[in-house]
Length: 212
Image (cartoon, rainbow, N blue to C red; front, side, top):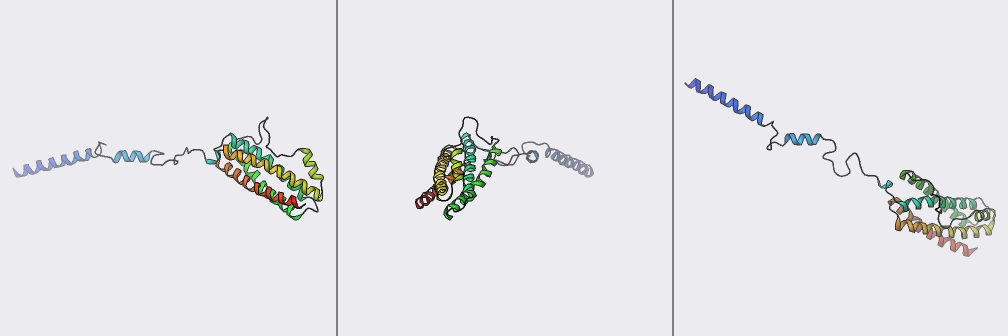
């Protein structure tokens, strides 16, 4: 009889262990391992905001119509300032402070032209303004540029300073419009830099003009 009882007990114990093993793999509410494993294997899961492969547009691509108009207008505006500066640097008998100013203007605005051209490419915007839009205030006409090109000595210095003051005033107006209406952080930063630096240069040019 004892032998029979031990055999039955061993059989019952084996059955209980088998049932317990099956229960552990059923995925019931008491078991969280399968759910955790499947969630971890799904692409894009367990990633915080901005970690998905389809991320939001970068800040450089965020812009509005005011940003586009500012950049499209400021590029030719800067280009003309560089052209006027080159004219002065090619002349003889120009006072050193005016030559230094022309050098500073060219050195500052030349790289900004490259930067702004790159922005328009990043924004998928045209490199020039659409028909019907001006290039900004303070631009010199062809006759103005011819006068500056042919002038020499003190006459050229006075003409350059007078024209560049008006040119800077136009750029400042454009920059302040961008500051109040623009959206792109890089363009807004540039507009503030332009306003600050060119306001300072206007004061410098007015002082130089008074010495001629």
